[in-house]
Length: 152
Image (cartoon, rainbow, N blue to C red; front, side, top):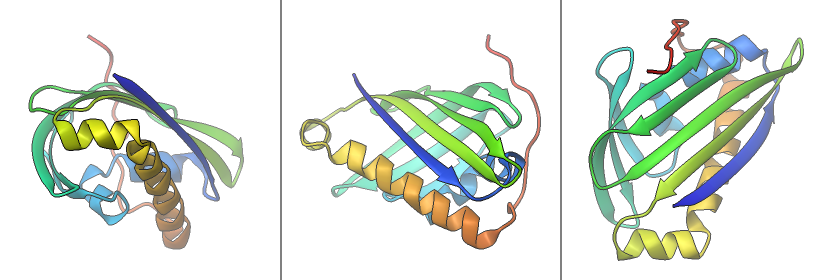
């Protein structure tokens, strides 16, 4: 399993950055290789990705969510195995640090090669930069879910 970590500072208040990240169905607008995400309920999402010509479908479960602080998830099925945490730290009234840490277990030869060559880490870095551009140019979140999900 490989760990990928990326941080980006965005020029929006912490609640704006957090609220936008709760809008998972909009991830394809800034995440390369993500074709579609369907939110099934407050905890569960179905992902469809296509990376390097390989199409994958998998489900994720939010395992911990605290508004304006963090969202943690894990995969629950499919070939792609991962878990991750995105955290939000207020820098001042109009700036937020967003940090994404993911543990990814590549499956298949193409994904293992992408991991070994650093392609996964570069993709995550690009996704975080696209998130920065997306939220800063919007200026406001497209929606919000402010509920609390506790581990266990």
